[in-house]
Image (cartoon, rainbow, N blue to C red):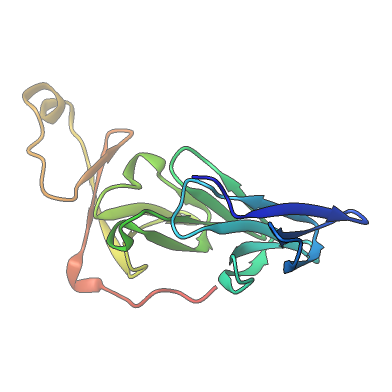
Amino acid sequence: RIPSFFLVEKEKLWGILSLQGQSIIPTEFQFLQYEWMHTPDFFLVQKNNLWGFINIEGKEILPLQYDHIYETSYGYTLVKGNKLGFISFSPEEKNDRFIPAKYTSIEKNTLWNDFVLVWDENTPLFVDKEGNEYKAEVREVRKIDNFFGYPSRDNEVNINNKYYLPILESKQPPKKE
């Protein structure tokens, strides 16, 4: 895909011009990066030391409220103070994922499961694709279970010889950041 705009820098701030030279997005961002693999076009931006995402019209897709956003091979890690969140965009919106920046840790190997294992300090929780939160049932794995094989259940996660399972009845709406 060939973009129909130019990224421009003026006095250490970034913006976007059309191919005809007209301003699309004013030069007001400390950082502006075109996220070309996504449709529709959007940009990772930093303004007033806060990070977020905007579209080609300059409208916020994800509010500029994060201390940092960095890309990983999975999507984007959101940092707000000492808390982490996650967002991913896909061509099919149903595969998008948002986890508010309210957790101290996110188990990366669960990011594409129906339920993602997160930590709020020492408390394990699960978050679904819409950001709803669930308490976690935790089971220790006994040596005999390892030997004979532990019977795996849907949505169960094995981390360091402990099994975590979302308690579906404990569903809570997404946390506010």
